[in-house]
Length: 177
Length: 307
Image (cartoon, rainbow over all chains, first blue to last red; front, side):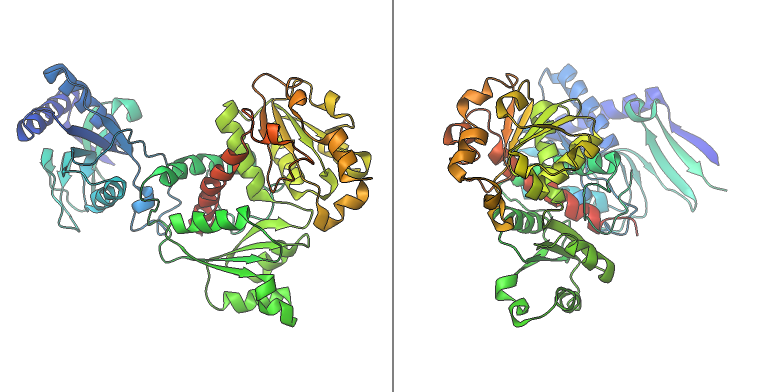
């Protein structure tokens, strides 16, 4: 299997930094702002964004963890999806929620995440931040903050790999030949 | 660890890994019951029938709430209001219900093995919600969940089960469950209510309540199973209450952080006094709360199993 490096450690860090500034710019600071990471990798990216915003603005933005398994539309077609904990320790009513994920592909994960958040409360806005926006969307959903755009060809897969989960920070494309 | 079972019939056949998977899944589902909108779409379009041949408040309500919080449709059937009173057999009742395409049938029956029979003839998943004096697996799972929540562990604890052990499916399921994790299980009750096989399960028997309770981490009180002739095994309820009723002064014999459990329904003043049932060590209502999360987990695992 071929492996192409799209973003290295430093480049990934710059992408996260830029997304932080974009979030702050778009929302005019971080008043009424919250971050919710989608399990698994979105959680770690959200934690990095939180840390970075703290360094820039000296504000602790509330951070939540969302497991979308209960909201999947393909739940019984998958090979036993494990349900893990959702932990959103703040009230989402009337605030801006920035959903964070590693890759947006079909848009179905985002749809599930939006439904999950709407069941918990009524945020003022929901925005979406992703590291990679790849093609083959199946729903009319688009990210508000994008690290990079990548157009995959047949047989390709984009992977965001993070130190916390995979032991290394990088974005790669694998190609099955 | 994947879940592969179609049915949940007994604790005895479950592995430690399967039990832990239920507890972990239940922990994820517990949060749903704490929301303003207590519903997720996970089991939308699934149908769950509860078929109860014995009375129940907690178990049936708990299964129904669990199913509803997962967006499944539920139908409740009691033997007394069904065609069973017209002479229909268990098998025919079950086959007729299955023709209406339910996904899960939850059954409680006074005869041990009734759920096992259904599991062999039905394509639907079957959950044992109590079969005679045999097993009550979801009760043991919610008890273990509650123990883990309160104690932070489920190993190396001293658990004392007090009461009508011989007729109690809750005791049997809990013994199987607790022994799988290497706990010390002590059963205490009048000799007529202690079954002869307990030593083969690795359970110690004490006939004197005061010695049984020494250094206990968990005390489970059980009611006398009047519907299984329990009262005929003791001289009187009053005498039973004197020797085996759990009272406030007993608590000090156990560890400082002991928890008091009871699967319900309680007969206050018999196996447990008001002071203990409503006291600071009691986790009886936590058990009921956790029952919903554990049953949500079971329904999810059975329906989401790898086919």
